[in-house]
Image (cartoon, rainbow, N blue to C red; front, side, top):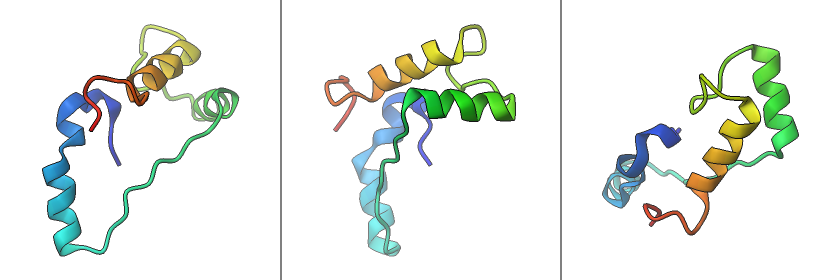
Length: 75
C-alpha cells in the first residue's frame, strides 16, 4: 500500500523495479467515488490521513489532486 503522505519517496520506480525482480507482483490502483469513501470513513470513525483538521470530503479532494496524472511528482 502507498500512502499519499509519503510524497515523492513513495513513488520511487527503483523500489518497484527491485520488488518485481524478486516477487511476481503487480501495481494496481483502486478507486471509489467520493460518496463511498466518505461513507467508509464515517462507518469506521477514522480520520482521513490528510485531514485531521478538515472534513473528509476536503481531504479526499486534496488526495485526488495530489494523485492526478498532472501532479509534479508522478512518474
